[in-house]
Length: 146
Image 1 (cartoon, rainbow, N blue to C red):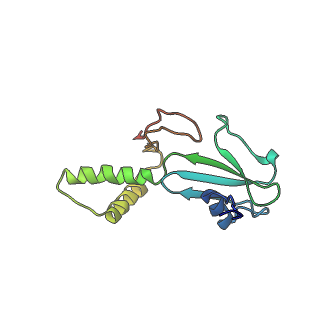
Image 2: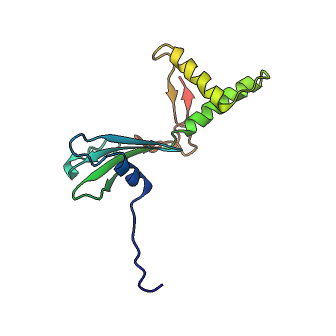
Image 3: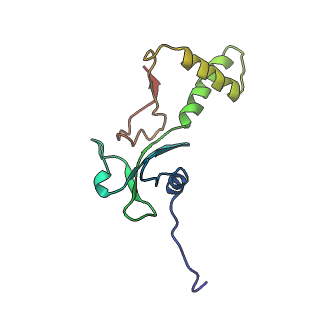
């Protein structure tokens, strides 16, 4: 309709950051969103506080306060890694005629990880077919254990 106001609202990650208290100028908290992808944010009170990594990846978004920015770094897959490890473990158990629910599988994986020696197993979490976009860019990055 003619005369209907149109407003551009903030994206979901900015709204999550607001709800998490990212605008607290004294404490300067960080905020991570762990969904299909991962988004990690920090407060930058001035453009000079925006810190770029060597690969110059990430994003900076103006927040709804004068001169305040959210500096963000995303990665292609966060909880998709949980789906991947559950699928892998379920497949191994199924090959032995054993079935477990996802809840049981998560408890087993947690127990397995908790009982392992520090630095004895390294997981590279690049399960996205697109590779990785942060904190580095590599279309060929792949998941695996080392």
